Length: 126
Image (cartoon, one colour):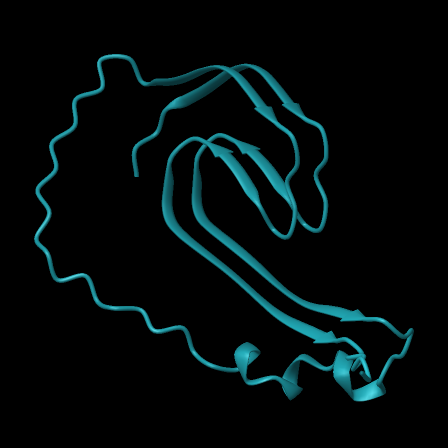
């Protein structure tokens, strides 16, 4: 893996939540993972079993990854081994978001969200 120095003059992140990461410098492996249940109801009701991720196939299915078969030819010449960034400004980071300035060898990101919406339907009688 290439090794370079990472130089950032200024970083401003207004909000970083739910396992968000800011990393300056090289990394071998970045693995961001997030899963969430988003429930919207008109009535405040909670069912005990609905909080279990294993009840929903979306969280159990493997993600299909196609193999990379293309041949890649790469030639790099770094006259200055420095990654320079002037300013980074981010309004918000959430759900395992990663801000990374540097080299990475292996990056894997996954987010799975199950939305549940149960709204009452009112039928007008005319």
